[in-house]
Length: 130
Image 1 (cartoon, helix red, strand yellow):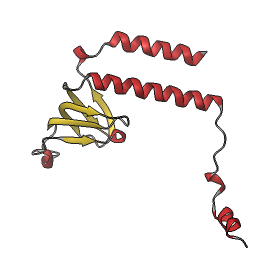
Image 2 (tube, one colour; image 1 turned 90 degrees about the vertical axis):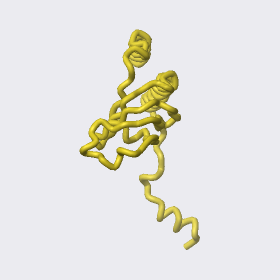
Image 3 (cartoon, helix red, strand yellow; image 1 turned 90 degrees about the horizontal axis):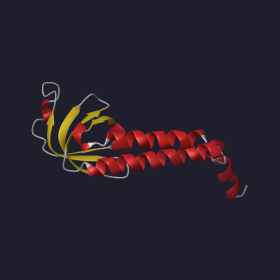
Image 4 (tube, helix red, strand yellow; image 1 turned 45 degrees about the horizontal axis):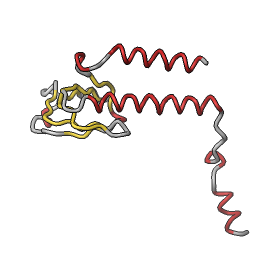
């Protein structure tokens, strides 16, 4: 049996990608736009104090240093809200947080334009209905 045939047999059928429907494409586009807007909001908050709550219930307060396209966050001058539970974090000054482990980011209320966010959300909802 030729090697191409063996390779075809070894490749699971689940690996073959089905063509995307227009609904899936529009959902991916909306997600990309949303991530882009979130990133721009975070970029405007560089240098401000934020609280990041992780999925393991660790809350870290610190100054936002940078955010990348994967919403990975770098904080400086950090402190942990529950030192009894996480004593090993006492002497950590800076940290890099992978975006996939973030549960919440608490932003300073006076720094975020909530009206702009509400308008953008309404526009997105109207575009999705159409």
